Length: 270
Ligand code: 2HA
Ligand code: ZN
Image (cartoon, rainbow, N blue to C red; front, side, top):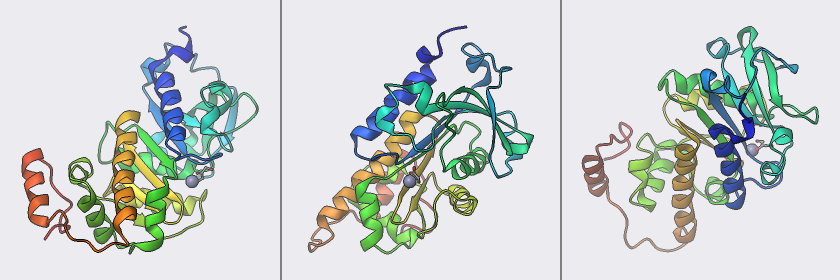
């Protein structure tokens, strides 16, 4: 067996939590990540037959039967992950139709997966139904996106259009736009189901007055997705109180579509 702390997925997870903390997106125990692991690759680092503990999940996700995830722990701080990955992270396999998560590695202090596990697993199911290469669900609390949900309409078309208008790259990075949930109680199956439903049409889902969810094929791409939306929200919060003299027009957004070969969400451009 190879040393799991040298596994590319582990190294990348540690770097990502560190980077997200450095961006100020994950104060205290804020934020959580789940990364679906390749079974064959994991087998090089771990005896996948050795189950340490069984944790009930409280939901069903038969689509994820036998799927493995590297996931951040409940109550754990992103800033601490790099110093004690085996305490702050865990590797689980879903069984019994998703009702049980078997712990194979990590959470060595007796801990468990993130309180947002339902939203993560349900979002994986939703994204996998659209893209079989989808692997990552990431949640965090970036200040400008959060601030925007206090002062901007939560209408998804309007919210998306505002972000697209804030930086030229936005429509290229998230042509599917941003979906928005109203304030809901976090950590529940209900917000998990609502998030997953929104994940069917966009890889970004804003939780009003709370934060954002992103999904993607790898940690770098998903980080970049949130980073780009947050940058746009930052520009918006800098200019929202000032008269807007210039903007990116719909005609220009159509030019970007053509130039970069992306298709804006249907009906979102005039
Ligand atoms: O505690 O971000 O949404 C982690 C969270 C909950
Ligand atoms: Zn949160």
